[in-house]
Length: 438
Image 1 (tube, rainbow, N blue to C red):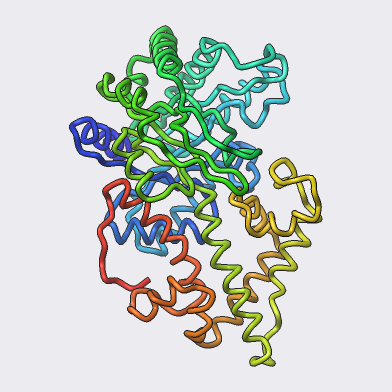
Image 2 (cartoon, rainbow, N blue to C red):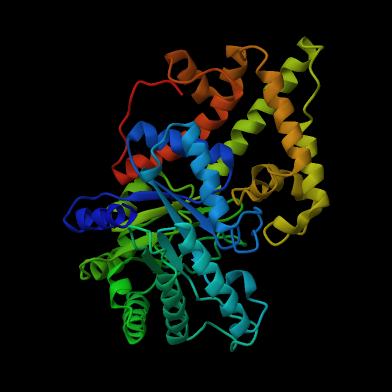
């Protein structure tokens, strides 16, 4: 099912249909539930990906191993009555990423276990990314042959790990984008797309080394190459897609019968830019931080609404959400330290409003969860007044008046996320608008 689904997408796109698929790169439950709801409305597949930092054989920063992640998403799908066979699970940046401080031999041993566990669990889209330097690698960018040899080594492990009872084989993505995953760590002006020569070399050397390992069948299932199309975002800046600058890449990929591009860090692109990316054969669009950023926008707006209503509701226990977020991020800086300024006076602003959205790592923490639950409880006691929705959530205010959105805090949070997802669905040509209420 999974192999055929993504392969069908490739065939249709190559036949001239400008179709794509968006990839939800998040473990946040509100985001996952919103994604399931949007895919259900659109009667579409849902591609959900876990990264090598989020989920690994030791639990990653989410505490989940690969099989746990699949069970986690499937549990929410069951609650939403979403067909399990329409969910595609992907593994992103699988390789030695989490073990770059170790010698290459040891890092790759960990990576082999990582890839094996993903495939055994049922992940059917595998991004093999071995582009990062390990402790004892020479300084500078790795030689493309080294990158490809390591990718082929991990692919061989993946193929050996396919459960005998499984009816499908995984598809693969190779290559990597230039910026770090999850957003740039410095200011941006513009980016130059990956050169045609570099992409040609990436494809050629991967194919050569896959075939040397007798991975012909696996190479036939390589559906996409990750390149930099010239899009990125930083803490306060967005580099918009410029189709004209990527035309060399467009012409290049048209020469391959079954390869497309996968675009990372497409968050915050304008709807027109997303659609141009799909037309230009960047048919897999990765999105993550923008989804949790939209969730954060909704939560901050609801906290503002709560502060307006507290004097009128003496029985409420204040959630103190903003202060809890700020104090927790101050106390535990490891998830934002490399991404935000050294000026402490900027930190509260960056915590709450940075496009890098490092706050996404803090939502599962106990104190923040307690505050968020209190906020939801307070605002669930009665319908939120329309004037406050008009003031703080004007788009949702209009949707509530039209009857397409329920007036409760969880629906408002998920509705904010779905606005982003709808933009991606339209760009991919898979949206099917209905008059339903969510």
